[in-house]
Amino acid sequence: MAVTIPTRQLFIDGDWKAPISGKRIPIINPSTEDTIGYIPAATAEDVNVAVEAARKAYYRNGGKDWSSAAGAHRAKYLRAIANKIKERKQELIKLEAIDCGRPLDEVAWDMDDVVSCFEYFADAAEKLDSEQRAPVSLPMEAFKCHVLKEPIGVAGLITPWNYPLLMAIWKVAPALAAGCTAVLKPSELASVTCLELGQVCKDVGLPPGVLNIIPGLGPEAGAPLAAHPLVDKISFTGSGATGSKIMTSAAKLIKPVTMELGGKSPIIVFEDVDLDKAAEWTIFGCFYANGQICSATSRLLVHESIASALVEKLVKWSENIKIGDPFEEGCRLGPIISAQQYEKVMKYISTAKEEGATILYGGERPPHLKKGFYVQPTIITDVTTSMQIWKEEVFGPVICVKPFKTEEEAIELANDTHYGLAAAVLSEDLDRCDRVAKAFEVGVVWVNCSQPCFCQAPWGGKKRSGFGRELGETGIDDYLSVKQVTRYASSEQWGWYKPPPKQ
Ligand code: NAD
Image (cartoon, rainbow, N blue to C red; front, side):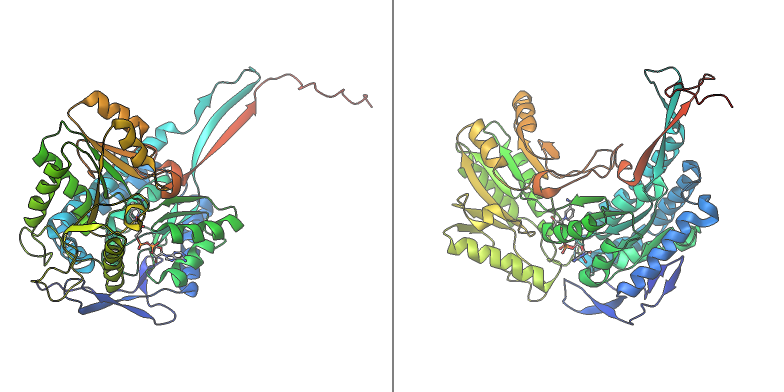
C-alpha cells in the first residue's frame, strides 16, 4: 500500500525547526526492510532550545498562561487535539502501521485509545478546577488551611517504539491537562506519528512551546533531556537499563521520575477453564503487538491436568494466525521493529534450545516471508526456572510453558521474578481468581483475559517494572505538585514570646 510519509523537522516553540546538527535518522519499514523516509535527529543543542521554549510557555505573562490558566481552558485544547486526531485517523493508522510494523487493526485500536486518552484528561483538567482550594480541617481553630494542586513545571517525556503514539499520549495528555509544558522525546525507531502530533498541535493553535517534539537517539537527545536542569520532571517508558541511567542522572538534581519499565508477566491457567477461550487469551496475551508488549503474559503456568491439551490448542490457534504484511486484511502478526530486535529475539530462542528447552512450535522466520523482521509465533516447553528464556524479557512473540500442581505453587512461580508489571489468571472459580489477584506482586491483574487496557484504569508496575502510575484518576497526579496554604485567622496576638517592654 502506498503511504506518503510527511517530511518533518523538530517541533519546537509551535513550529518546525531543522536540527542544529543537520542529522537525520532513516525510517526503516520493518516489513520490507526498505528505507522509506527520514526523521530529524535532535542533539543536546536542540534539547536546550526545546526546553527553553517549554519554560517560556510555562511562565509566559508571569505564569498567567498555560500553567496558571483554568483547567477548563486547557481542556478545550485537549478536546480540539482529540477531534483533529479523529479527523486524521485513517492517515495516522497507516503511518503507524508502516513505521512500527503492527497490523492495521491493532493500530486502529491505538488511535481510538489516543482520542479517548485526550478526552479523558480533558475531563480531568476540568475536575482540577473544582478540586482547587480544598479545605483541610485543622485541630486549632486559629488556623485555616486549603490545598492547591499546581503543575510540577516542565516535563520531559521519553517514550518507546512499541505503541509509538499511544505511549506518548499516556504522558502528553495528563501533563498538559495538569498545566505542565512538555518536551517529548519519542523513540528513534518509530517517531512518525509523534511528529504528526506536532502538526495537529499547530492546526488547533496550541500555544507555542506548550508541547515540543524532538526525536533523536537516546544518548544524544534523551540523556540531555533527562539531565537538563530546567526540566522539573521526567516520565520515562522503556527498558530497565535505560530507566536506571535516567534515574542516576535525575538523582543528581533531585528530579522526580516516573518509570514504566519492562516485564516478564505470568498467566496462570487453572484446570476448570474452557480450553479454546484459554488458548485465545493466552496467545493474545503474548502475541498481540507482535509480542512487543511490556505486559506480555509470556510465562504460561498451566495446571498439569490440562497442560498437554492446552498446549495442543495453542499450537492449533497459532497455526491459524495470519502473519505477514501489516496492511493485509486479517493480518494478526507483523514484523519485529528492527533488525537488531529481530536478532535479539532469535538469540533468546537459540539460547533456550541450547539450555535444553523444546521449541514446540515456531522459532524460525516464516518460510513464505523472505524479507522483513518476521518471527513465527513461538511456543517453548520443557523450561526450567533457571533458564534465561524464563527469566528475561524477550519482547517478541515467544511464550514459555510450565505446568504446576497446586495454586500455591503457581503463585510462587508467578512471583519468582524481579519484574512486577502485570499478571493474568484464568479460572471459572472467581473466588480463586480473587485470591490469586491479591497474591500477585504486580500493578496490573487481568482475570479471564490478558492485555485489555483502558485509560480510565491506573497503569504501572512494582519491583523492577518501575513505579508511579499513568492513566486513571491518579494519572494526572504525577504532573502535579500539592501546596498547602495555611492562614492565621485569629485577631489575637499569637502570644508565644513575651512581648517586648513598652517604649
Ligand atoms: P529503550 O529503553 O531502549 O528506549 C526507550 C526510550 O529511551 C527511547 O526513546 C530511547 O531513545 C530513549 N533512551 C535510550 N537511551 C537513553 C538514555 N541514555 N537516556 C535517555 N533516554 C534514552 O526501550 P525500547 O526498546 O524503546 O522499548 C522497549 C522497552 O520498553 C521494553 O523493556 C518494554 O517492556 C518497555 N515498555 C514498558 C511499558 C510500560 O508501560 N511499563 C510500555 C511500553 C514499553
